[in-house]
Length: 566
Figure 1 (cartoon, helix red, strand yellow):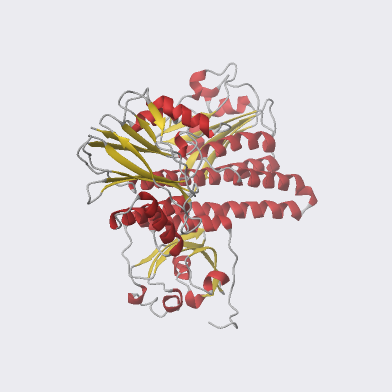
Figure 2 (cartoon, rainbow, N blue to C red):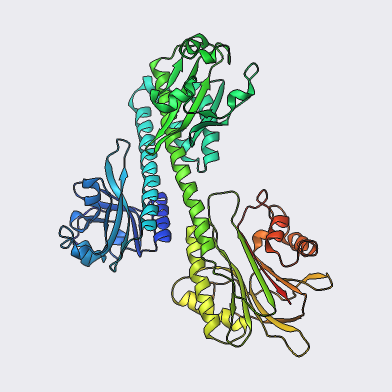
């Protein structure tokens, strides 16, 4: 391509970049794209791994597009080697973008039309696994929700500008668009539904239910005088006596101008909740009916076209946001499982009991970069490692996997003290361009000596100090000033520290999520750890996590590695 190139060019978009990062992290392909196609070409607001100049231009002509076939067919396109596919073998994406293996799933707009794709590309032939394709499909659905939410926001902003008489309605649309755009988790979405319903529709009370298996479960509601508490229990979807069931099983919104109108349609509701108007709106997304939102007004009122339009928009925004939050929550759960799966089985070493535990953060939407490891070395010593890569997202988890594997290889290959190995890790980390930053402790535990003890030699790259519980019940931090964090400078000073451990002693390595708490000095957390290791079951990492970072308090991932000398 020359500088005379006049094809389409795009710009990076932070949200679509995030979807591209998730696809790359889960599938492990060199290139991942969020692309949109029109009659002229395609643009990539989300892109990782493209060669230049395409990465900078973020666009190509259709001569370089596989995405166009995903859009035209409105179906996934999955090929192991594009050179073997008749309609792809002459596509210029093969020589110019190194697109050999391709897996792309369609993105849909508000009208259900395919407008682009989320895809992964490999420069080598590749058979895509069912698990990889399932992840890409789920991410494409979540990305489609983002496309649709943006379209709804654009529609609201256009309505605001269109005419003076619709100004208030447009402001409400914009309010809802922005409110739901900021809602990330399922709890955020449920809270936003209740808040926006009161603001936009003027209802006195709001309740939200979700479909769970074959029941409708009320997850947000307010107890009301005269309404039995049992009314908020799970309602089987087969129980057609209730307007809420009718709304979610296909009859559409249930809107009544007063209590008498509702009782006439559903006699089971007579005398419940007063005489005010009521609306029950199904929350319908591409994946199905997710639940319902109930709005109750204090007095009877007419349901004019403007209010019905507001209610319709509220249900649409809420359903799209809830669908996106549920999909991303499922992906986060998968991410935590994958992160834990990267932590290999611990070795069996005579005279040592090595145990470990990893607990993800109990709140928030991100995964982290915490890890642990242990290796039985050829010289009879045992290498022990723990670390925390900077960041709390899939990128951090991916960097963690690479840095951990690099340290394993260096530890096995070079029979050197821990400080020297960490220096090599810095050189390799920066030299290959990984540039992962974070903290770590690397320790070597020698075989049993003549006096029955084992020398522990350790080095810390900015990591909290190890703790030792002695056989007599005394516990203390190991003394040794931590050196510079990993990933900042090659050749940084890495000092080794030594201590002798004896049978019955317990070594505890951990990440900062075990001891750090908001608005508290780290020294207080370390003191609490030293005191706690003397009271819980020795050598039980889960006991430490439950005592110091239970799920109710845990705001960060936690990894703990313990070694008990026999």
